[in-house]
Image 1 (spheres, rainbow, N blue to C red):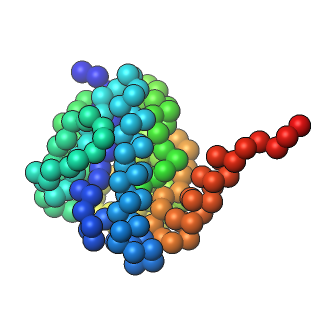
Image 2 (cartoon, rainbow, N blue to C red):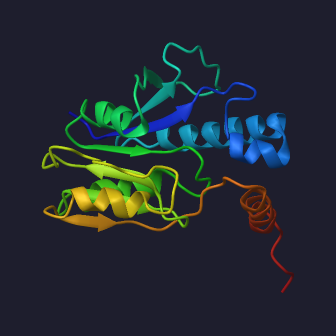
Length: 200
């Protein structure tokens, strides 16, 4: 069985995605950001032939129209930890990531699977104390997440308690986009990366 990366995402519907960001920039701008970031990520992942890509959406059985051909599954019911546990349990070597980290891509996933050669679990930390990626091999805790304070600065630390008897590795720490400040910082960095180099 090939390595698999699962992208966790909310179905792109007005008023239901990036609600914290939407309070600052409006529902339509938040939806546009969500769709653009998700589409760019899926294009990058599906272009890589080193692993399979699956999109796990909530609510289940939602029809999604994206310009990317990718397998869809439902996330199921329960809190985030329960839904992630179910999705991760489908595969032997698997990575699961969010879709609101614009800098993340296929190169990071390849690095995570490479690290699983010597580690039981790999995490991609987020700058806010959470994490944007978890990758697992065959050796896993019986209870993957325990009692995690999701959407707080404690999420990674809480999860790591479940892995204290396992070999853990980390890939690069990246910022997510949850607030207007994050959003404008991201837009500024994109403009800077697209700027023409100075003349010699």
